[in-house]
Image 1 (cartoon, chains in turn brown, blue):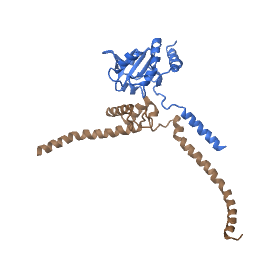
Image 2: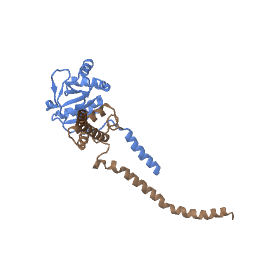
Image 3: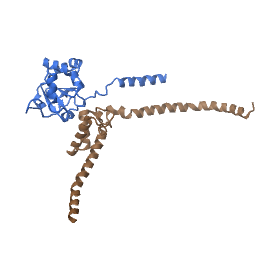
Image 4: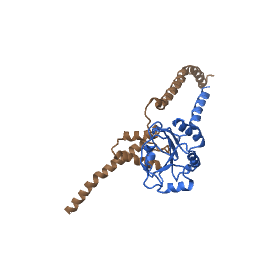
Length: 143
Length: 171
């Protein structure tokens, strides 16, 4: 009985760290893969895609992480070969400023147009006040 | 007036956007040293090839596979090109089964000085390959000067690749 328990303990202690390591590695591979675009099915990440190339790239990510490379190094390796296009979060650089701030500029422009419209409104409400008096009269049935 | 201008702006952006090919990606490898590898030459027992051996020559690296249907499209052009002897063409037999590449070349003709075997696509990843066929022009210093994804066309050969090779060869 004691022996069997000992063997079980020994077996789990041997298998335990390896399994934990694998799960942690899987999570890291997955995290990096989520950041990388599949090049043959361009609206998917390589984590989501079952395309041959995506499978190969996941293998490459895994091997590089196992070899002790950091996540940033793996992403750099991919961008050196496939360009900024492979990263879902593009880097902030002079030539990507429009990409990053274009939506903000559009939003600001829209907001300005809206403000100009809104500021013109008081003239219209003054007219409405006059109309309102007229309407009140009608409603009160004095006419 | 404003809605018309807005419409024209949006239409212009969409027009440009729709006419761009999203599969044609700028390669960050152009202007960089061609990645090194050392791989077996298909159909020749024991022979190996490395880009190092090509230093001093302008050459083409063409990625192909027996399962690749669009490789058939560019194949006649490559055959013609090989006959003209403008530059050696090295094949990268990408993700093929052992022996399938050799069989394919026997059936369709072999335009390559030699083809190296990349069964797992590792050399391909190093070259940023995402679709087969792909073609690289590599200069005498081992620097990638041109990269084309997809089958090559007669226009591409006549208007870009051949002039580039001539220029690189200093002719």
